[in-house]
Length: 257
Image (tube, rainbow, N blue to C red; front, top):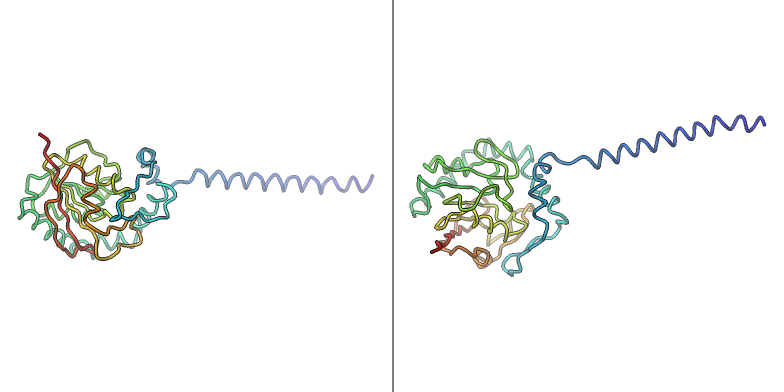
C-alpha cells in the first residue's frame, strides 16, 4: 500500500508533462500552418486561377524544372524581388544608369515610330520602375509598370501571367523578363489581350547566353516567340546590350477588320 501511494505523484507528473508537451506541439503546428507570406496572400485569387500547367511544346523554349506548385514559383521570384540588398542597389547606384540605358532604347523605338508622346504604355515585370521612369522622361508620360511587389508611383502590383487590366488598354508594352515566365503562353497571351489592335510589344531576351538562376525558361530561337504571338506579327529585331539580354524583338498586334 505504501509503494502504491508513492507512485501516484510520479504518475501525475508524467501525465502533466505529457499534456504540456502535446499542447506545445499543437501550438507549433498551428503557427506553421497559418504562417504565409503577406505578399502571397494578396495574390490568392490570382494563383487560384493559374493551376493547369500549359508548358510550351516548342523545341525553341525549354521550361526549367523544379516548381512543384505555382506558389513555389511565386515565392522564388519574390526571393529576388524582395531581396533588400538588390532593392537598395536598384534604387541607388543602378537607378540613373538603368534609366539612361532604357531611355536610349525607347528613344530609338520612338524614332522608328513604335511609340509617341501620346502612347499609353505598360512595362511588364518592372521591379522598381526604371523603364517606366525612362519612358516618362522621353515624353511618354502615360506609362506604368506591374510587378509582384509594387513600387509607387511607378509600379503597381500585378502578376504578368494574369494582368490586372481589361482588354485592349495599352498602345505599347515592354518587358525584359520573358525568361521569368513559367507559362510563356500565358505571358504572351496577356500582352496580346491587353494590347490595342495595332499596338506594339517589345521584348528584350537572351538568345546567345542563358539567363540567371531565377529564370523559369530558356529561349533558344526567335521562332519560339513568334509561335506564341498568335494575334501579332514580327516587325523588327536587332541586337542590343541590355543588362545581360542581347536581342530586341518587336511585335505588332494585328488590326481586325
